[in-house]
Image 1 (cartoon, one colour):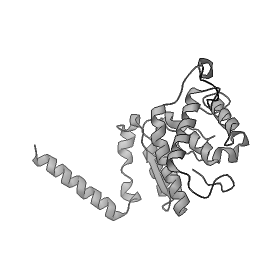
Image 2 (cartoon, rainbow, N blue to C red; image 1 turned 90 degrees about the vertical axis):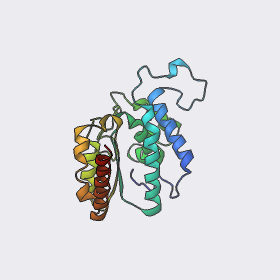
Image 3 (tube, rainbow, N blue to C red; image 1 turned 60 degrees about the horizontal axis):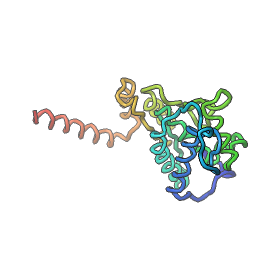
Image 4 (tube, rainbow, N blue to C red; image 1 turned 30 degrees about the vertical axis):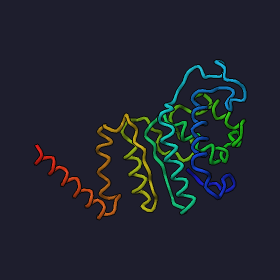
Length: 214
C-alpha cells in the first residue's frame, strides 16, 4: 500500500471493477500455472499440482485494501494495513500488482499478461514468493499466519507513528488466541481518551445488564 505516481493513476479506479480484477488475480495465483487470462479453454494441465492459499480470505482483504487506497487518494492519508490471515497473501500480491507497486520494484511483474503470468508462476515457488507474506514483499512488517500477533503488530505501528492510520485484519484462526486478547490493552494509549472511556462505559453497562439478567 505504497504510492508510486509513475505507476499509478491519480484518480481512484471503479471500486467494483478493481475488486473483481484483484480477486481474479488472487485466484490465478492460487490455481493457475499457465493460461492465466483464460485465453483458451481451461485444461487440467493449466492447474498447479499443489494449491496453497485460502481463496475465501482474499475478497475480504481486497475489500479493505481498496477502501484504504481510496482514502489515500482522496485525503493523502498515511495508511498501513496489517493482515493476520497468512494464506490470504494472494490478495496482497494481487493489490500490489494492480496498483503498480510490484512493477515499481520488479519490472518483470508489470501490469500486463506477462506480469500476471510471472506473478502466478512465482507464488509458492522456491525462487519466488512463499505462501505467506515475507520481507521480500513491499510494505510487509508482519507475514501473517502466526496465530495471534497481527493486532499487537498493528498497535506497535500505530504507537510508533501516532499520525498514521493503521488497519488490521485479524485472522479467524487467531481471533480467540491469548496474544490477540492481550493485544487489546494498548487501546488505552492508541485511542483518544474520550473514545476509550466511552468504550469502557459501554462494556461496564453491558456486563451489569448481563449480571442482573441471570
